[in-house]
Structure formats: structure tokens, C-alpha cells
Image 1 (cartoon, rainbow, N blue to C red):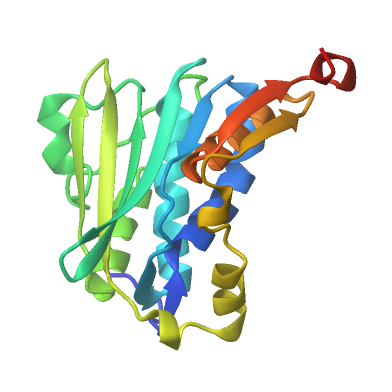
Image 2: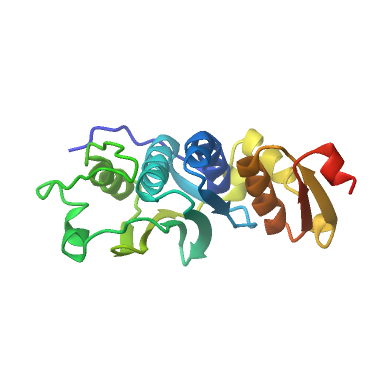
Length: 219
């Protein structure tokens, strides 16, 4: 059984996702993957931040590992009654139907190699389920072999007013309606960063043009 100490607090799940996506950038760029985080609303949760981070990182690493080159990874957050649901979907290799019920079962132990022969321990999803159960959450998956997977997990919704001052400052600096409809020129010579920035700006309802260098931007 998992011995992780659970210390719940109120925090904005979007900030945790954004930080993990930054860590994912290099690996996604190496495989030419498109990564999208399309949620505009900032949602607080009440959970142990360390265990939530471990679950999220495991799902993102799995998506990276099992999605072939030029594929897509999409992350989203939404309200589900008293909970907040986080989804990580990919266009990867998928999971065989007979194995879906076994991936969270420590008695069935299931592991396989990634699309670039990345190795895994097979323990990540089992631990993720334990972490989430300790936090009052759940985890599940929909998958079609050869088409991709959609993992989702829930955490109890939190209270914005109970978030730390640092979290609240980040919320206050989140772009508001004043960006809606604005046209923005994004210049970056790194294609992955360009796509990431475009996706982020689009979630704020802006019109985004991109260029790879100053000369292209002035055309």
C-alpha cells in the first residue's frame, strides 16, 4: 500500500498542469508532438498537491511515451458536480481491450514499451489510483487500440478564497476579457514553442498570427 502522507490544500489545478507541460516540452519537441491545453477557466481543487502532481506527471509522461511522432496530446479541465475533472487524451497506440481493466490492478501488473522504445515500470497507474483514492478522487480511461487513449481523474473542487496568496496573485494576473478579439503576432523560431504559445493565446479568445523570425513577421 502507498505510504504517501496526504496534506490537502486549496490550489489552482491549471497552474500545476502548466508547470508540468513546461517539463514536457523537450520530449514533445523531440517527437514533433502537438500539445494543447485548451481550458480558460481557472479551477481550484482541494487535494494534496504532491500526489496530484505525481498523478498528472504520470499521465502526461504516458501520453508522451505512447504517442507516435507527429501525434497530438490534449489536456483539459472541467467542473463535474462537486469535483474537478482533468483529462489527458492522446492519439497514441491505445490499450488492448483485454488489458483496460488490468492497468490499475496491482495483481495484474501490466507494462509495455513506448513508441520510441521508452521503458516503464508499470507501477505508475497503480500508484495513481491509490493517491487519488486517498484524496477523495477517482481515475478512469477510455481507449481504442491503434487510435489513442483518454485518461481522466477527479479531485474535490476547492475554494478560491482559501488558496495561498501566491495562487491568488497568479489568478489576478490571468488575462481577462480585455484580450478577447485582439489580434496578436507571435514570433518564435522554435516550432513547438510557437504551437504552444498559439494554443495558449487562442484559449483567451484572441486571433493569433505566427512567424518564425523578424523578417517573416514584417511581411
